[in-house]
Amino acid sequence: MAIVMVSLLGGRPVPNMLAILHLKPDYLYVVVSEDSVV
Image 1 (cartoon, rainbow, N blue to C red):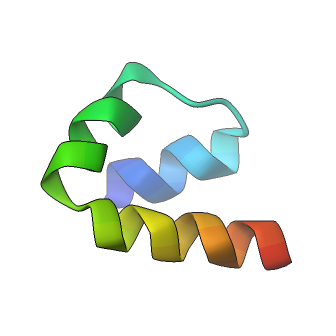
Image 2: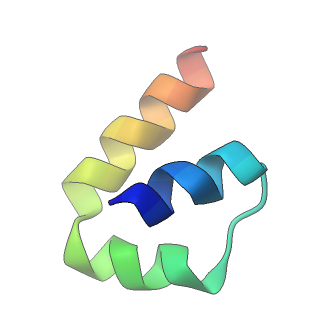
């Protein structure tokens, strides 16, 4: 999960995001939504 936050904070989508998309899609959408709002 930490990888997702680090990836978003980096401001650049990494290959790991694809793996997370399959593992925790709902969690990823929540994090992306919060990042977009902020």
